[in-house]
Image 1 (cartoon, one colour):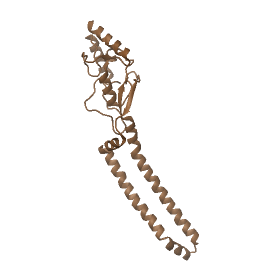
Image 2 (image 1 turned 45 degrees about the horizontal axis):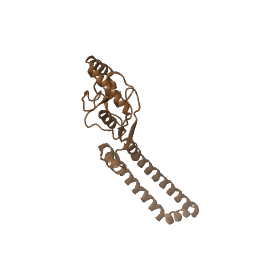
Image 3 (image 1 turned 180 degrees about the horizontal axis):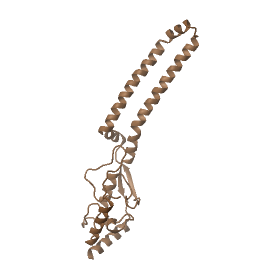
Image 4 (image 1 turned 90 degrees about the vertical axis):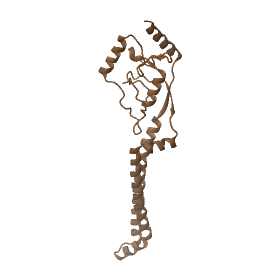
Length: 224
């Protein structure tokens, strides 16, 4: 549902880019529509004003008093909600989207968020401990290879089988380490990448005929 008011300082959610609740209930919206229609005025459904500084346009399929909006108000709402469509009629606007941040800046902003920063710190701790354990196991296996061969010969295990078992163990350890590091990195980079790609600056492309038609309708409403 398209919001009637836009709170100051709202922005796209850093984790899933979901929109904060900024819309009125169905009953409240119906009462607002009725009250606006009763005074016979056409106002912007976002800022509730109709000044001569900026024309009112009707860019989607919405009807009645909720059909009109200022271009600047609509663009501000689209940018704050990370959307390119009307919540009421689901009409997709003709927009031009450009990335809001370069990837280094977006990564810095992402990590500066408290919850994301805690997740990064915990994953770095896991990575550090896992790296220490993996390096220790590999070192012990490589340096103690000759010892394992000697002990194997004492219990009747051939040199070839002992070396094969040690190398098999090393491969399992390294594969487990690589897989875990990959999953840790993916767990951190995937949400950031989705947020970065969805955080864009939206510029609405309007038809000049739409501006003229909306202006004439607004003028006729004032005359009535």
